[in-house]
Amino acid sequence: MPDQRPVPPRPALPTDARGMIGNMKTTALVSLRGSIDFMCFPRIDSPAIFAGLLEPSRGGAFTIEPTFEGANVKQMYLPDTNVLLTRFMTPEGVCELLDFMPVPEDGSGADAAAPLPNCVIRVVRIVHGRMAFRMRCEPRFDYARGAHTAHIDKNGGVDFHAAANAGSESGTQLRLNSTLPLALDHGAAHAEFELSHGETAGFVFGDAEGLREKSFDCEAALTDTIRYWRSWSAQSTYRGRYREVVMRSALTLKLLSSSEHGAIVAAPTFGLPEALDGSRRWDYRFTWIRDAAFSVYALLRLGYTGEARHFMTWIAGRSRLCDSDGSLNVMYTIDGKEPPEETEITALSNGNGVAGVPLVGNAARDQVQLDVYGALLDAIYLYNKYGAAISHDGWRDVTRTVDYVVEHWREPDHGIWEFRNGLRPLLHSRLMCWVTVDRALRLAEKRSLPAPLKRWFDTRDAIHADIHEHFWNEELNAFVQTPDSQRLDASALMMPLVRFIGPTDPRWLGTLDAIGSELKVDPLIFRYTRGTTLDGLPGIEGGFSACSFWYAEALARAGRVDEGRLVFEKMLAYANHVGLFSEEVATSGEALGNFPQALTHLALISAAYQLDRNLDKVHIPWT
Image (cartoon, rainbow, N blue to C red; front, side, top):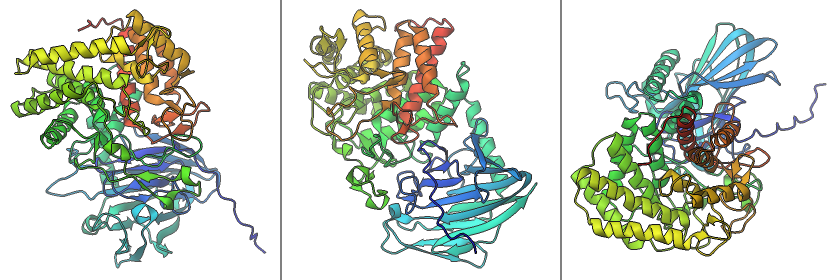
């Protein structure tokens, strides 16, 4: 009689046991088990259709895996592409699973002559021996809250229809095409099949209307997609010693950009906890002005002026539509609208209680974060330097925003860390207000543009004095987070990076040493003192990955190149197996927070550039 004992569930994979694919419309995460267990559709900020990463039993997934238990698995990107290769190895055979989203040759996401459907393509190849597989495609509409039906049509494809009351975007229907026969099981498509050396199977999943109208040659689509990504990668001007990790970071930033709108999102995910207790589950699938502007800086560094131009067009639209006083929102959806209200998704809570409930939407949309203007003006200044000159209308919008900062820089705000327990005067916000006015002055003088120069000069000098008088702590020999406090803040690491203070100024060196003493655990830099109740939130978060790269760059700029290089190299060890970084890292090594995060990858690019300069003994004037 066969063994009827239940098979125990497999342990959950770590968050970062995944690679990312995408088409500049949306993205998907593919696990080391061959499962697409996180994907939003049709856009990156649309409701999730696969969220098994958050809740394996109800979230939904699209899995292709060997029936052989215990297969050895390796995952990699094809060189200079975002085509993900997962290799399964057993005593009987070796399989390659190739995952990608097709993009047109120009990368626009649309070709009028032959539009490409918004979809995922999965190709299974046997390169040695033979192997048996199971495939199961089980979408869950509207963050696993909506019901759906499924049926097989006369061509053998499976259509998934959301119920009329499902909250998914209007008209979103999904389809799975396959080179193999498919069957249905409780609303999921499934198949079991066996392949031998040289045989392949293909699966295409995505927009139902597009896939009904177009039959796909999976191998031809793979060839075209590889060609596109390698052509894009070849445009990089970076030739330094860290080319592989810098290129992977650039490819990641490209996936987080919108081909249609030019916006760049902070991360492709929501609900991944920043603390080991399952708390701090925010939604990062929006465009933060700050993070996107920093991304422009990183892409300009690599020679990608087209991406910078596309974002500048997007932000120009936000500036034209901003409030009459020149103020901007903290964040936007990729098409420039206000993000939705913050909502708990209990269907994906995984039974972890209140602390473990993922959130969609983001309440920080309503916050005051004065630092965003500095990031924006720095990006505008650099794009004028390395890209194209600002237009008359663009300068008019810039002056309106700078005047807003001139009027409001003394006010408390929520800051870069988006504190949810009140407003306070913050060093980083004052610093970036200084950057706002400084870059506007530089631009006005270099381009002879009309501006209230005396007022701006006076304001810049007043902010400079305010930071030195009120945020300097003699006892700590360091700049502190708020006036008259003892609290250090890792965002102070931006001070020499934005050229507010010289990298070897005694006050800065004191601050750098204080951060290294108080906020550092090996290479990990915490945003502020570990275990603090400063932000009013539960849970103890990990080291903030971007801060660690800022620290490495600050060390290098201060002439402590060996220290900076060691921090940088240690941080590279926290990348996952395909070179992607999470938002945070626990002291025990676990990836925390949304994954992968744009801010981390752009900070890596900046630090790599600085280390190359130092190690190559290239002198850059302080100008």
